Length: 187
Image (cartoon, rainbow, N blue to C red; front, side, top):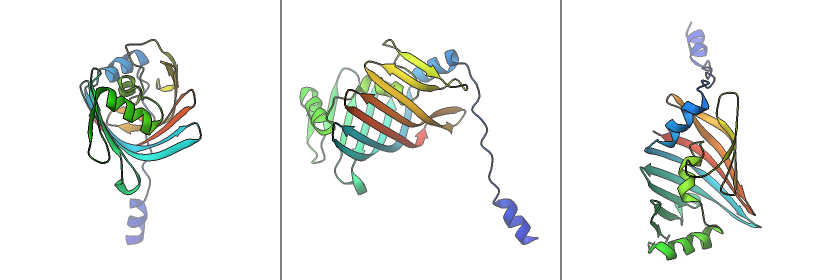
């Protein structure tokens, strides 16, 4: 009896398929989401150079706070942007603002990240402020997005409360490839 109960406790719970909420309902809900966070990892390749980093993201209204950390938490950079301003705290604790921050990001990453649009793209929706081309799966989730010269492929989603949010994304643009894996979302 004990063995039967133990085996019954080991059964996997099937994951329900994503609800097919219409894109015209999902998109504006996600585009107006004011607060969210995620923990994950990124792999960046620019030309023949590249690096991997841990990622923590906190979004509060228009303010984006990103922390990128190297292996075992070494090194890293913290970025805060609100659309109008940008600041960076380097791995040595030096605070940079405006033009210096942009130059530091471009130097460290090899490109200037589209921070204003990224807040939408990570949620699996286009930036509402620019034209976009989208391709949806049968569950009304993005599989492909083209916007502002970037091509974003959404390879996997994960359930987060009543919503399904991206788990694996690849961002590409002229010699730049960023692969992001989300380990956990906070809504």
